[in-house]
Length: 438
Image 1 (cartoon, rainbow, N blue to C red):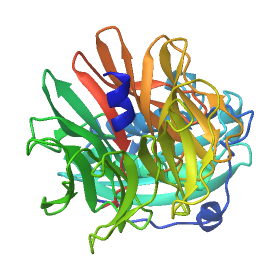
Image 2 (cartoon, helix red, strand yellow):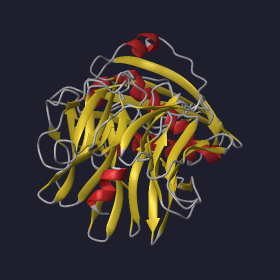
Image 3 (cartoon, rainbow, N blue to C red):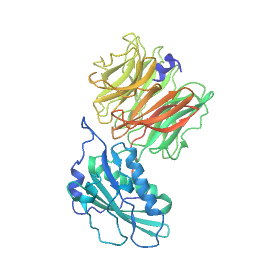
Image 4 (tube, rainbow, N blue to C red):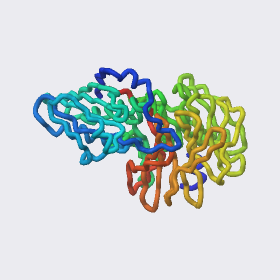
């Protein structure tokens, strides 16, 4: 992909009863994962004990799934079961010897029971603060044996909520483009890389996938009608409508925080400029007025500002302006090629890709242009960052040699993991908002 093109495109669940200290736990943050000296928190997760019914592998499967989901966050260090000193006898009263867990280095402990009745499962989970020697919550869940992953997701999400004040990114999806030869389409996958599905079947050139913050819509640019147009799809009904089909470039930007407007890059008047479109009224308003190329607009989470890319200073750089197009300010000065801005949902920081030593790396900077941090340092081209709803993880595309990957890392650049790898071209990942737990 040449630089000119790059610049242009730059289920159940929770029956939750909260006992004892659970009410307090919901309001109290037990661990600060944003502290400068953050280290992973050690947690011990016991196998769920069969309470009634025939013993089965479901209890181990459920426990292993919770372990795996917590490990994906990069926040926890899940302790090996072989290190556990305290056993649990099925049907025995809940007696916690906290010293046995403290001595193996656990800060937190999860124990629980599981009842299996045919295809129905009923789980109880109890989270303990080992250091304080107290229960943080006790909750109940129901599901089916064929969908234990949903139960595990909700347990992991509740643990994260109790300890950090945020439920995490478990109930999310990631959209991305797969390019094969001369055509491409948009696919989605879950947070854990499972359930890869087609979102489009255009078999054309597609670009710039964008989710609406309310989870109702998906927008993207496609050449399926012979030239670039911006399409809006209702995710529940599947109905599509064209948002922009002007002459020249029609490129999709981000939605407004209330999902009622969308940013566009259009060249209908001969030069790439940024516009805002009211989705209901189709009222279009131009925001930038420059002889330069202005592309890749991204709304701030409070809706007051817009980050975008412009070459008005001589090379592609990140700029920030007010939502009405006023008070334009350049915020990147290191390097001569910076693009693909993505605004953290928590506000304050913008992730982007920058060219350094002939490789594209991911950086983040605050919205005033200060506190620059380089997040990737490998020998790959790392591009198209997109923040998770929690603002604590970033998904991005990484390409090295003939292999292309969709990867995730924590906002500080740690806990790198590969979601999907292919010989095909995987680009432009976009993180969805959280879905409702059903």
